[in-house]
Amino acid sequence: MTTRRKRHSITPMTYRMPPDIADEIDDLVDQGIYVSRPAAMSALLRFALDHRKFDLMAALREILSTEEGIALVRQAARRKPRKKE
Image (cartoon, rainbow, N blue to C red; front, side):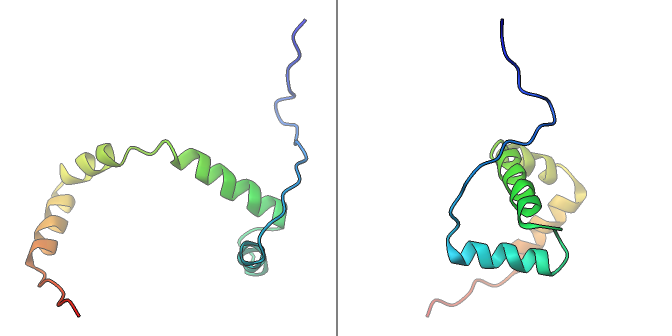
């Protein structure tokens, strides 16, 4: 007999957050972007996990195959290089 996790159950976890990260998350909650620390942590972790699979080369090929992408490259090519200090 195999055991399966409930599909929508929440697994409690303990994590000791560095103060600077806690401050950033509290700021997001205070701004009303998230309703609570756990909601912010879940959303931010989900974002990180989803984006670790991001294929940058495929995204670049896709944007560079559009008129907008070509215009961005041309615009960047016309910019003067920054002077090194």
